[in-house]
Length: 511
Image 1 (tube, rainbow, N blue to C red):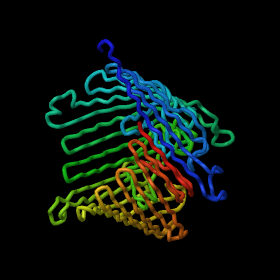
Image 2 (spheres, rainbow, N blue to C red; image 1 turned 90 degrees about the vertical axis):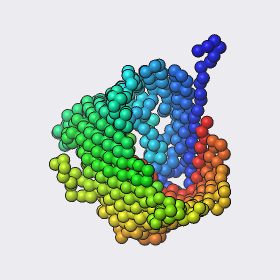
Image 3 (cartoon, one colour; image 1 turned 120 degrees about the vertical axis):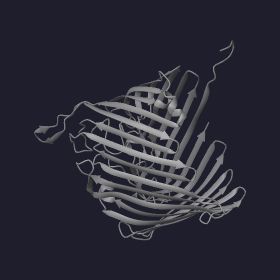
Image 4 (spheres, helix red, strand yellow; image 1 turned 135 degrees about the horizontal axis):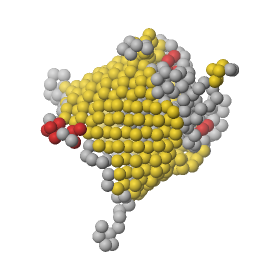
């Protein structure tokens, strides 16, 4: 650094505020507040040797679906990171994931009310090319407290293609990884009957090994994890070990993509506090191996991973682009994607299925440009959803879902997108319909109107109207409508959200 030269420091951050002014009848409301908001403000400072960050949260009057534990405000996220050569040291709160997250994944998902960051320390070492070592220890966040057990762990990742030039010459990349996680939690008085107290382990260990191979268009990932005895509320205080194994293969080349994967998990609920409920205090994460749908009716019955009971989960997907100016591709080409997901109960024998089907989803999507100004997406979906397994009661729901999504380029800066959806079933609340119109006036305005209608049992309309304005890094959205009670899900993790009615206002700013 020359004389007088200053070290550059960059400051960035964001503000997000989601607000609801409720017009719901007090008898139907889940909260006594008329005005509710979840507000977050993040600030990040970065320099060559030191990074630091913090987040303020204001949830003194939280939105519906966020339990009373969320109520409050403060600064639950704060950290400083030192960087020097091949060493990185973090103190404070942080997020981390080992491998696919089978034994450790700390992350934030605000829409689900998840923030299981760790408060403690982490060190990352890169002693040589292709080798990354991590070690950490901390207490897990539980709303406004850090009252779970102590979580510690280590991870090593080795990229062999950086050691062997022969692999690089053949366009082959091979990485191997291994992880270990330990939870320390004090014993507590839990009785199976008035005279018999459980002898609970204060240390629970989990380990994970994995291999990831990529050669040209081909990819293969294999991973296995195991957990020692961890009796908890989730598994009815069972002393059985936990296991999860996954195999995923893919092929991707211009015009064609293929994905095949399978997973078997058993007793892999892993919390930093054994008696907690809901979506809090999870140390790990198991992906659902089901498609995360964005269409309203396709997402009406979302699947949640069965961590404690275990499951066999399979997913396969094939996508193909028909070229332009061919018989099937037409003038502009066409994309077809077929996806199949299947989840079933397990037996004690590793390779045998259990009796119950938990979830099945077969869907096909077709995307085609009809003219230079009109693009059409069609989807058909056949779904089986075991509501008893996922939600506790309701039996098997078998539904057929149809979606037509059209985009119209009305002018150079004006687009209109429309959706028509229909769900047909004889179970639960019977048939549903959904319609949406979204007018985009670039670069600032978007106007949206939608209606979700149950014309089976309840004959209820769930209507929404929204106006969005964007300017530079600012985005503000004003709306009015009502939402149905149901589950909000992402990646196999679900959270129940009660019905709401009223005015909504959202503000986002990035700097």
